[in-house]
Image 1 (cartoon, helix red, strand yellow):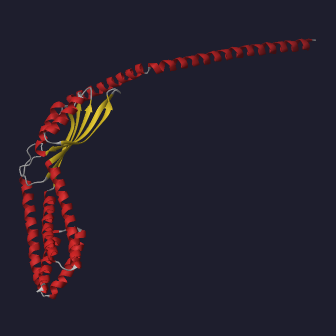
Image 2: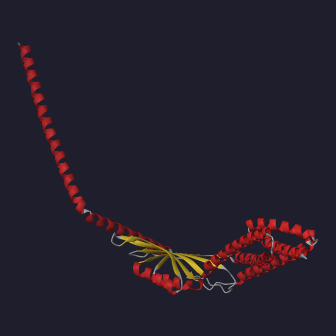
Length: 350
C-alpha cells in the first residue's frame, strides 16, 4: 500500500515537472526540475508505470503549449485589426492588446511659472503623476529658465495633456513611439499559470511526505517555484504600469520670443522670411547683451581704464625723456667731434 502511494505521488510530480519544463521555466528552475524528474522517474520505473506517466505528461504539455499558442495568435490577429484613436492618445480599440506608448515634447513659453504650474496641475487632474522634474536657470541672473519633466499619464487621457501643450506653448518638437508587448505578456502569464499548478501539487505532496529527505527536497523545490512566480508577476506588474500609464518626456524653455516653426510644405519666401526674422532677432539679442554687459561692467572697467591710462602716460613720459636725453647726448658727442676735428686741422697747418 505504501509503495502504491509513493508511486502515485511520484507520477503526479513527474507530470507537473514535465509540464513546467515544456512552458520554458528559468535555467535554475530547469536544473532543479531535471534532478527531481530523474529521481521520480526512477521510482516510477520500478513500479512499471513510467511509460504511462510520460504519455500523460506529454499530452498535458502539448495542451498547455497549444492553449498558449492559440491565445498569442488570437492576440496578434487582434493587434493587426486594432486602430488608434488619434495622434495624441495611446487608446486602442482592442483592450487585450498590451501597447506601451512613449512621447517626447519640446516646448517654448514666455510665462514659465504659470505654464509649469498648469502642466503639473493638469497631470494631477488626469490621474497621473510627475515621475521626475529638473529646473535650471534663474531670473535674477538674467538666464532663461529650462525644465525637464518626466510625466506618467493614463494612456486614454494623454490627448488632453498634448492639447494643453499645443494651446498654451510653442511646440518645437514632438514624437511618439509604441511597443507591442502582448506576446511577451501572454508568455509570462502562461509561465505563472504553470508554476502555480506545480506549487499546488508540491504543497499536496509536502503534506503527505514522511521522510526528512523528501520534505527537504520538496521545500527546496517550493522555494524555487515561489521565487520564479514572484519574478514573473513583478514583470507583469511592470508591463501593466507601462501600458496603463504612458510616459511623456517634456522639455520647457523660457524665451522672450518664440521660435518660428516653419511648416513642412512652406514656400521658399515663407522659409526665407522665417530664417531672416530669426537671425535678425539673434543679432539684436547679441547687441543687447553686449550693451548690458558693457554698462554693467563700468564699475570694474572705469578703475581699470584709469590705471591703464596712467600707465600709458607714464610710459610715454619716460619715452619722451629718454628721447630728449638721447638727443642731448648725440648733440654733445657731435660738438665734441667737431672740436677734435678743428684741433687736428690747426695742428696740421702749423
